[in-house]
Amino acid sequence: MILDAALAYLHFAAILTAVVFVASQAALCRPEWLNATAVRRLVRVNTIYLVALVLVLLSGAARAQWGAKGPEWAWTQPLLHLKLTLTLVMLVMAVGPTRRYAAWAARLDSGGALPDAAEVQATRRSVMIASHLMLIVPLAAVLLARGLLTR
Image (cartoon, rainbow, N blue to C red):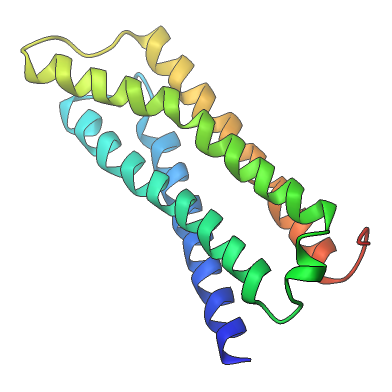
């Protein structure tokens, strides 16, 4: 029982970390606010977000494998697979912003200028889509926890 509680805590902590840092990206990635300091901060914030998403996946898989309901039940649930898929989609969607933030920082380090407003807006749009996908995951989680739409 303590293992299940510890895994749940780790999973929730990773989820909350991901939420905080994707929200931070959305707040920082605005053309009107972007400066050299914000670009460097976006690189760090995004790194933490990526690590948090990986921890969400790993802790969720650990809960499915070693949690109270057991792997025989958990791995057969379509809602669990929906949660995993959405989290993987968010992780894949983070690749574009990750590359852009790194390119922006490299350009600044070489004496270049900040990115143009259109590039910043496109990057923010990607971050916002991923953050909105994140809202579907808890819906699947509460349905799964209550045995609704399960096998």
